[in-house]
Length: 116
Image (tube, rainbow, N blue to C red; front, side, top):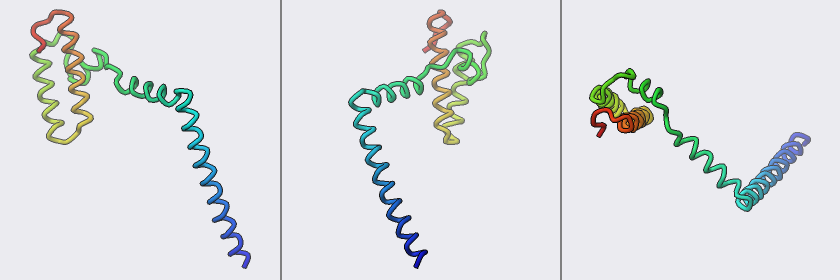
């Protein structure tokens, strides 16, 4: 008898707790949308995710030195990009692509060869 009563209290208590948490969450969402906190948090997340890599990081990703020619960079890029395409690592493939884009911008701004 006591075990059944305790089980019913636990079930009722957890139901009340779940409703209270859901209501608090809805209220927090409503408050965030009124103050713009939700939009600001989303913008900060997007900014962090789209942070451009540095030239040094790009060179490390592609495995090229500072005095590497554009042709050497393209060769490394193509090898790494294709290897990751075959093995199905989209994350690494995108890192390789971002590294090439970064170095392409560097080479274009410094006037090295044709970075196309």
